[in-house]
Structure formats: structure tokens, C-alpha cells
Length: 435
Image 1 (cartoon, rainbow, N blue to C red):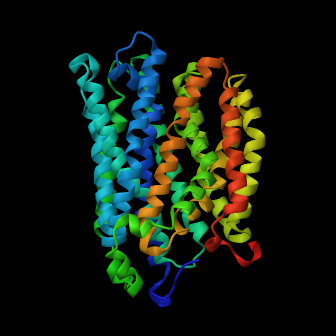
Image 2: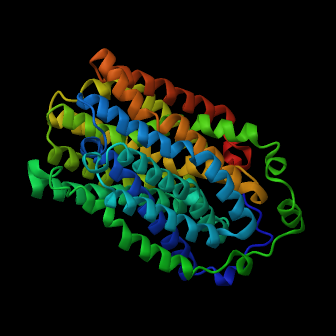
Image 3: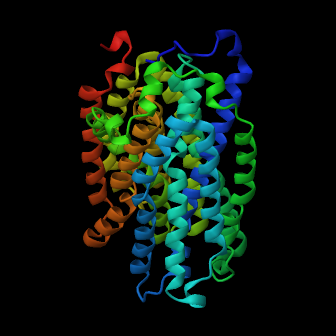
């Protein structure tokens, strides 16, 4: 799977060297997903603050459209930052990404509302979201690659499982903060502008992550570049990526169902529950439950993938996902127990497939182009499939009056992921038993 010829000596790979990269990656992923989840969780309140439309659904659609704009920049930004990671190392890029994400998030918490400055308010919101998007474009893939490359052969899917767990811990923290504030302020949450508080709390989290990343050992001290890697550094970006486009698009198709599921859990489900009369506090509580279960499910997915192979876990997971999606969507809103059960099942499956999928996103590419290629395919899938999911769901529900229409949309994408995983899983990641 990995070229270990330049790995650091085994005697230096103790518990400490495993923990430090994990902490750096986990905390950064926590900050990224805390920032990203806040926007979806508070979409209803942000729509009132930054947009002026007579119909609430129109303002909500505009808020989701703003969510998409921050993801439009991600493929290009991720490509550039990923290439920087290939050329200048993980440390340089990870310090840059945490700064950009934190500045964008804190900026949202400080923005004047539409009532104060008119149309400049949503324009500035888009700028802050764009700054977040640029920072987040390479955060996950570069941080995870940093962990894997420092621990060659050391249960890669399990290590990635910890990074995936962090993508649950960030939203979990965001949900706890949002629920606490909405419960405390009640109907006055939006009017009191207490919605700003969760965004401003990103500042201390970002500063802690920045401190740890400044302590990172530079890549050059851990990995002496080979002659091929030195030669690749002098090659223009798109020339270096030539021959890897097919792999990138196959991996994007492999993760289609997961990208939609992730954004439903992050953004759409809470909004749907609020609109169906569950109330903000109960909806936030449901979100917290999903993330509490998501973290151990991610670790389980990593363990299973290291034991049985990533391809088997992906195919099995997406087949189950495709079979259950429409039934799960059909019970949304019927009762609290049924709705929570449906959401929990979605969250567990979505997290189990995440570790082997991330392994494919990152390690399917040779080291010389891994930063650029992994960030590009991850962000293309996120922007084209994941970021549009809440907007598609809202539009389909408005047209059909039912959540089931979007369930069919997600079923098709899960089926695509299952087929792609079965026939196009990267060969460099296959264990002998999977050949």
C-alpha cells in the first residue's frame, strides 16, 4: 500500500509518535467540522439575519445557496493547497488552513445583519464562507495524509477512523452549543443575536489547533524525498496529475452516497425536523445523538476494514444503505421514536463506510501528487454531490410535499457507490485476500 523505503525507523514509532500526529489531525478536523456544521444547524436563523425575503422558504433556499458557494471554491483551492503540501510539506499547509477556517467562522459571528447594512450583509457572508471553504479545502485530506505517512502500515483504516471520529466530535460540539443557546434564549434566540456566540467560540479552538501545529516536526525531518519525488516537484501541476484523472473520478463515484448522507446529517435533517414541528431544542438533541453514535461507528468501520478489507466494507455498507434509504425517509416526521431510529441508522452506516472511503480518497495516489490529487477529488465530490444535497432535498420536498423523493435520489447515489466500490476500488489498496 505504501512505499516504506523512506519511513522513519521503527524504533522511533512509539506511542508518542502515533499520538502527536493523531492529535494534530483530530483537533484540526474537529475545528473544520465544528465550523461547517454551525452554518447548517443555524440555517433557519441565518436566513432571517442575512436575507430579506417575504417567504421563509425562499430565504432558506438563499442560505443553502450561500452554503454551496463556499464549496465551489474548494476544488481549485484544494488543488493549490494540496500541491503546496506536496512541495512544502504538511506543516506549512496545516497552519495555513486552520488560520483561514477560524478567520472565516469568527467573521460570520461579527457580521452586521441585513437590517443594518442591507445587501452588503449577504455579500460579506459569502466572503466569509469562501474564506472558510478555502481553508477547509485541504484540511481533511492533508491532515489525514500526515497521519498515514508518519505511520506506514500501522492499521491505516483504524487511524483514519480517528479522523472520522473527529468529524463527528466537531458537529457534536456545535450541536451541544447550539442546543444550549436555543434552549436558554428560547423564542428570542434570533432576535437577541445569540446565534453569533457559537461562531465566535471558534476562536479559542482555532488558537489551540494553531499552537499544536506550530509544534509539528517538518516533513523534511521525517521523510527524505526520493529522486522520483524531487523530480516530481519540478513538474508543472497538471502534468504531474496526468494519468490520475480516471482514479480521481472513480473515487468520487465511490463516495457519492456517503457525501449526500454526510450533508443530510449535518444540515438537512435538523432543518427538516424544525419545519415539521419538532422544535429547535428537540431537533438539536437528535443531532447530538447522531454524532455521539457516529464517532464509535467510524472507529468500528476502520477496524472492520483493516480486518476484512476496505472494498468489502464499502460494498456491504452501500448495498445496505441503498436498500434502507427510502424506508427510512418514509418514516420521517411520523413519530419521534421512528424518526430518531431512521436518523440513527443513517448515521451509523454513513460512518462505518467513511474510513475505507477516506483511505481510497487519499492513498489511491502516489506520494508525489497525493496532496493535490486527494484534495481535488475530495472537494469535487463534496462540491458537486454533497454540498448540493440540502438544496436538492429542500427543492424536492417543496415540489412533491414529501421527503421520500429525496430518499430515491440518495438511493440511486448509494447504488452507484456500491457498484463503483465493487469494480473500481483502487488496486493499490487491496489486500491479497481481496484480489
